Length: 155
Image (cartoon, rainbow, N blue to C red; front, side, top):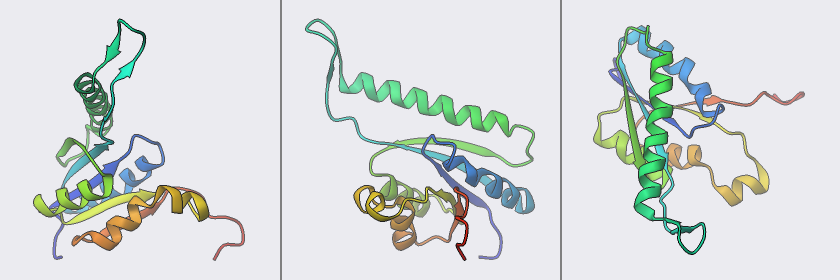
């Protein structure tokens, strides 16, 4: 990889995931790369019933979640408005790791920059690790940013 032209930053809506933004902005500024902020939503599979007369149907939930995710990404993009590089926003629905890997492959991504949530033990086993799946499945280079403080005595 000679030059960075396109950086992908997957965000899950948490402050922890946003820890990757500083590194991505620095790299994009140094190489004049464009950044794509990607928010992957979990699929909606059921109708939510409020009462017998009111229900929120799957398509309504998808529309609402997509609108909310775009608003979130636009706020992040607007916060970085004075940057010299282009920032795209994309919202997809599906398995996070699979969507990120496929998006990177199909869109000529030079680098995926993301933060880790620092789960370990049982939580990691139960929830899986999106970062781990991307590291093992992506064809693109991946830069992981630690989003949690190091524990004392950790080397």
